[in-house]
Length: 127
Image 1 (spheres, rainbow, N blue to C red):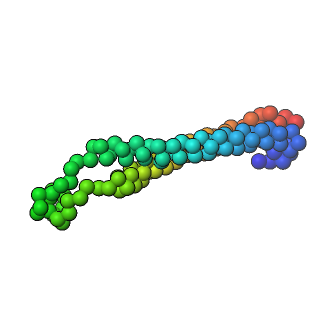
Image 2: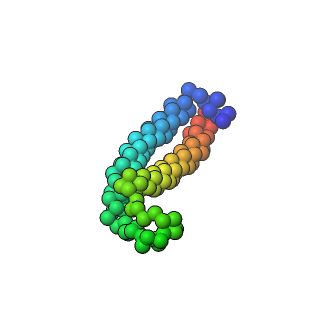
């Protein structure tokens, strides 16, 4: 950006302000996204595990393999197994939400930076 070099002392505060705004938005996003991720992967997983436990079908077989694979096992999944499965599902959903939020922030920052170049051009090109 040659204009930035020619009018450095005038344009630098504008660039620094835009940079500070973008960084502050990023810091705020990281803080809120981290809190949301922790909540979704702990409380959400516990709620999902409780729901899975209460809704889990009975796995008692009939002695010849039951209805799930014919391997002769007829045990019900443990609370730990259901909790682990729910926790994994909650992490996947939370990770996807984080990805969307971070991509949106990145796209908005790029758009703002391109807009800034035009603002600098029109503000400082006449000397």
